[in-house]
Length: 300
Image (cartoon, rainbow, N blue to C red; front, side):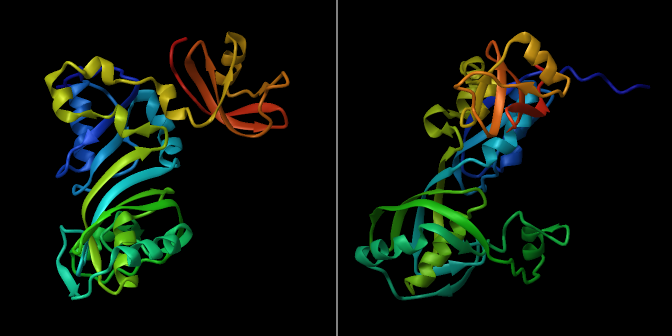
């Protein structure tokens, strides 16, 4: 007996979910996939269950733009509780060290510039980084000692929003690969008071911000489902855009480069081509030509 045919449909575009606390990113994708009855979906940047906020979810052809969204700048608002360090660097973990020290507002403010710009950061042991083919968090949960190598990340801005004797609320804009939990841990160590994250909200991923995010509750009610779906091109708006005619679009879809004409044509770098508001291809500009790298199968 043959397997029953799936009744899922082709859905192409982006939904910017305001992920609730307590849900994994994978579970969030599964929920939206069911809501939209979509054949294919994926997310652009994992959010821990503890975290809430912007989780861009791509459907269909938009999944081809996920790497470009993930490479974009991220923004977070987070709360650091002073006085304890945990094995996960957040409140879900077990306290491993404690301190009676507490920082003043002035001490925190003076330290922040040292954590701005290009810095070296050691990711948390409980992270999705692979070690010999295994996820670091799986090894850590099994009781193994996980010692991840430091790596460079860029903190574009780090600002103190508010502070009390016991905790501080901060906002950060940072590059791909930055761990806010590690940032909180390292701030606590430098201040000699220790610290861990108790609340974390992502407010931006690449071109997507929390102002356009929709809640899962609203989507489940159904009213916002049609309005929530953004076009595939929404994931590429931070990249150079080249408008092409149908002949050029056909060439790109065959994997052939096109010659760029006109004084306003971009000279180099990554770019994407669109025809009549439909994304055709993403590629690189080389010697006056757009060379396609990824081609999209969207009607135009």
